[in-house]
Length: 143
Image (cartoon, rainbow, N blue to C red; front, side):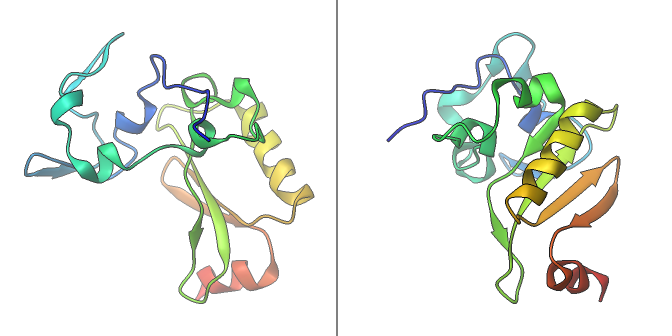
């Protein structure tokens, strides 16, 4: 089933918080040079496979609408990424706030949401990483 959600003007994944590899160039910390304001990707048809074509944020892929509409990255300034696993197999979600801030109520909602569902969360806020979840998960990153 394909999600009914769309990016629809959101370009948070292109704003520099992710490591980008675009046509031989690699960078993090600055927006993609091909993003056009109010348009989106200026090279959409020729965009690279990784990360551009394969990446979708969890909000966009959320077929069960676990994440509310107002958590859309361009509204909350929180980019929620797909599930990952530690090297020991512990599943977790990553959420990255914008360098210029993020909606604090959205962040608190996400933390509470993960706590209620016993989900592990790596929260990256202005360069600092915070690990919320099981003791095993938190210990894994304290090594």
